[in-house]
Image (cartoon, rainbow, N blue to C red; front, top):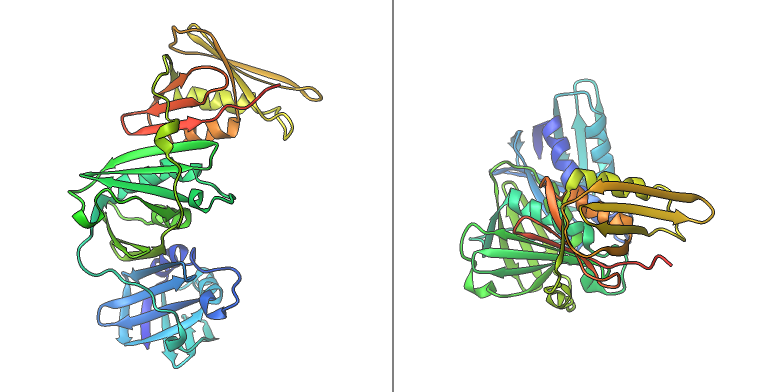
Length: 367
């Protein structure tokens, strides 16, 4: 194999592909990248056996076709530190030569035949959506998924395709985010009304894919999901288990509704939380006519109080929240203002932004 490629283009691809490479593994070959050059160009793939990603390099010239498997960290470091605009790779068997204008590296790799098979994308997509809409949904749901939870199903995002719409839901048991997007067309009847749970890691990788005006094509094959977008193909195992019946916890009887400025509320919550600690990390939200006060009190530290105006004409309400759960959602809301629906102090708060986003957050005790 002999290939010349643009260093910047290669660095961009590596930044995405290496997110799959495990930092530790009992199988050293999983810490490697598979670089393949053929008549269609140059592609790089990585896998941890649960998630795999393949990306083509747009600015590459293939002189001799071939394949090489080399350690990801070494190759990435060489590309990152290089000062050359163009770098050349020449590989024979399991030995890879990397050359720049004033540099020459030799890397010993693995036998390509030993590298695990990586799933590709063939045929039409069963679900198709615009990339920017898909990423907007991911941004609004990913932060609410469980980072560490014994309930495995909560470590992913629920997909509910129906008609020309896709609903995504993420929850960690203490908060829940739901976002709905329009698809490019009707979904394949084979996956209509089918509920699947996509791992948070796979969703985070898709969220990093670049490409203006690109579409994401989706195929479901057994217990795997395959996503194709431009020059990138992501394949992942689906999360097994039952996702909670989230519809049951979305309130439908709330009458107290506030209209709040997004940026002002984010600032108020962050300031009110400055004096909180692990033992007293709740922030009290006191709502009265056209006013909201966010406050916190830590006996050994002091107290904080931040007031702001709001459109509200309901009954006075006092309720406590984990401030980080409010900060997380306010960071992803793009609209200038949002609705905050409340009931009693022991019932969850509900945030709505536009027609497609609903966020449920459980209250905390302040006593």
